[in-house]
Image (cartoon, rainbow, N blue to C red):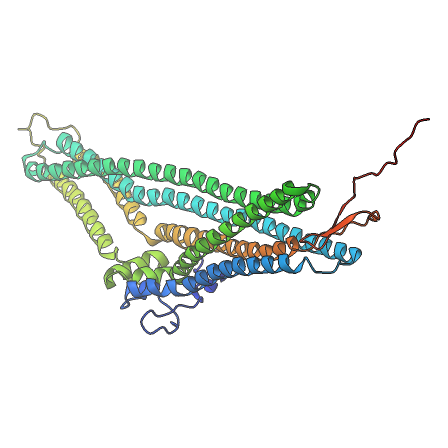
Length: 487
């Protein structure tokens, strides 16, 4: 029993995202997929771009402002730090540790969000499995009528052979038998053609399943690569926080080179990944809005582009409601079957009359011993034709197609598939946000002054202020030795 389709909360949320009319620049209430029945598809697509474009511009502008502001702060700090008083050692140490833990916490949140990508990937994998299974069921739907037609054709072929072997012995039957035999052979030939088409469909479905399986493997590789890239970035940012202290252990130009390379290299990677994430998220948002509008009512969305009669037929097979479009065909099948049975009854009646008249056509040397051989020989082929036509009527029913429609459209595309796309989109936006937050934290942490040296300087030491507000001590290496006089 197929349950009535209800859009998931993800679909409802995506459908409720603001759409902006490109002509009036006003919000669109209850947007229809591709503009609906009388709408303009191009205007609909343009309405999807508005909000993602604004968010993309804000994201890129935030990155540019962050870069400019941090450089201004860096220059100002370098000028002010030379005259800044020495900070309290314990307070500075606690403050630096706090910001270090905040940076590590942000990196951990990014890592956890990165792991959640696999949840979205799992939903996409389930969607592809459902699509593959739907292809199998679709093949079975096509195979059902074809097998029924093939069975009918096989029965028709047997009927033709039986007519020629058992019913040609009396001249009163010869004309009708020849005509019916030719028709039976024609039905058999047509069924063989349909059987060849069935083999072609089998090959196409197998190729489609193979393609889905290969695409599923490719998808897993892409998601794994994205996961690895973000994981490497998390590790590099962690090393940036840890190795800043190690760079201070170096001296002179090596310390400057270490700090410069480590800081600017990770800054470049973080800026780059934020820009890439902003662009990807904007593109994913357009897709999410597009499929959200479709999946809020998938049947109605497709019907809006079909003629009325075709739309009614689709509704019948997708929901098993309304008028059966195959009803007239079923009546035609029943009528054809009744004609065959009527013919058999007529042959049987003719045989009875021949027997009662005491004439078994002695002029026909091939006259059978059993005068009812013709009607009896028709029984088995007619039963096979009846079975084939019954199978055809059943195969043309709405239930199999409704189940396949539910799995392919309602489940694979609009439930598991959309859920995976929606989750990945949310994860990407979340990571972009926390990468930006981390950039704000790491810049503040890296600009904090270093802990001053607590050693007491010798009386003859020269004390110089560094750019971080710390002190460097240079002891006077000159020694004054009194001359030694001998004897």
